[in-house]
Length: 199
Ligand SMILES: [Fe+2]
Ligand SMILES: [Fe+2]
Image 1 (cartoon, rainbow, N blue to C red):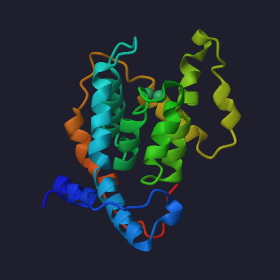
Image 2 (cartoon, helix red, strand yellow; image 1 turned 90 degrees about the horizontal axis):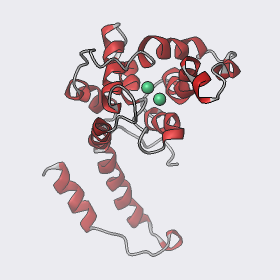
Image 3 (cartoon, rainbow, N blue to C red; image 1 turned 90 degrees about the vertical axis):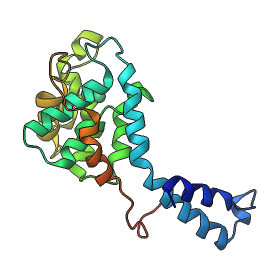
């Protein structure tokens, strides 16, 4: 049975409750199985969301997908590991969902799959990027200094300096999205979540 057919099968078996208070253990046994199949499709959803960025330039020299690909490609060609490359690839995936809060969107997506350092990097990259241009939009380019005490300050500053803020070159030959799909699928593959809470 294909994944889509499996999900359809699960969809056919729906709970009858109209409120959580009247739900049963049997209802939740089915719902929790369904949650696993939803998780199994997260990689596909992330790839789709990245594709949405292909048509969005937002005034920048390259479209938002190319910026993500260029950031990830630069990281890969500099010898970074797969987890780092994944974070580089998706760090701006929320650009068209919540532009002013896009770093938090990406951070929430990667948090279950990456280290604390890489989560912190993704979550704070927006403020650290500000170092390179916020003087032009009436903000403090040194706002990142509020995080000088963080053990991840230099790590995040390096990401922005070497890979993110330079990834707007229309002449750079980035790897295509297909090149990175195996990494996305690897890090967002279903896993045992029996000890995790659902937020
Ligand atoms: Fe960003
Ligand atoms: Fe970026």
